[in-house]
Image (cartoon, rainbow, N blue to C red; front, side, top):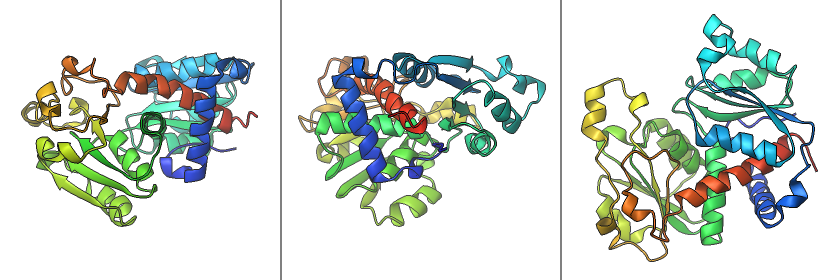
Length: 304
């Protein structure tokens, strides 16, 4: 039995395999319609979520399975003080696989250590979000036809953005990927990401505060929101939240085949005027999330 807690739990070959399965699902969804018949997914979401929770649920339903769970901590026994470990043991009696989002870093790993069924980390604090990264990788592969030899710009909140940390970890394992890290000083990539991922992997990267200066060289622009819920000081949030807003004029120097990704939800960091630009991939990215989660659920349930 296997769980997915960190994107590093998967080898590059396994990631490529999941992407290949997802692409096959896109081509022939009917082939997969009964693959998880009589299987149950439990979605344990201690933090608000729209895309991730509904993506998991629709993925399981499209595989012919069913879904149980809760969408906020207040509607679970956590409100009575039940531990994550005990919840995992209990849910193992009812379901075949768990998808868990939790505000505390490491909570899904605790769940996996105590559950007797696979656990998927659907986001833990500012730490990791492996299925968003799989979504991002499938999107890049479908848009570019490859996952190697490109320049990726990550823009916005690189300090608290768990999606960015996971993406850096995954893409640093592909050949010839360079990163441009675009953020204000206060929201730069944490030292542990710089040390453990970028420097350890001898990845080529540079940091800048200027989106305009970086734009012409980018093949991928990965935008993120400045996350109010991760700030201790409301004043710091207000001061930094509008630092980077992508508008049509900022794309004038961009490559014609730039791909713009965003894990969503967006607040105002991408102007709605860009939504009709063919380079805007973020709603296609949402759809890709369902397909890659279908592939992952089958892999962890060992469904042929």
